Length: 219
Image (cartoon, rainbow, N blue to C red; front, side, top):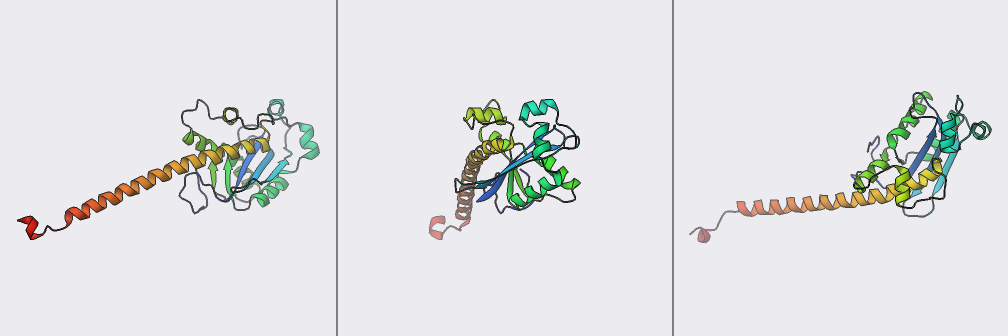
């Protein structure tokens, strides 16, 4: 987990009262060679079942490859008719996320594209962020696969909705991150509490051993 701004928490995977789960669809894997074609995000209210969502198609400078359309269902016609310019899309996205903590399933991928886009447009994304993939690996190390598709299948998450569309993947990542983060944070808090107890017991034993013996006990 990388923190670019303090969340006021010592937890490895923060779960603040409000945070953002985001997902991108792109024309490829490299932020230096490929482009964002869809941004999706959910503004999560941790203690409520009501969340706000954001979804926007982005018009790339080059045509969408056929294999990307096959993977995501996003066609060139869709972005031509409904897509916004990157500068408009990023401005709307930044308004939506504010300064909230960010969560992405594969954070290095999504943040790589977002940071590159922001840099090209002359600004920076300074939000702290966490990786739901890292949280799932920490919570369930014995699972054979931690891909979003396989985790969603294992936990039966939104199996009837479109995979590789940003909002559906956000929903899946939101649940996986929330459950995994709570599991890891609770376990690590228990470990910290146990270590603190051991330190107190050792300190008490040290103080007791340093107390001078009375004359009677010495005799």
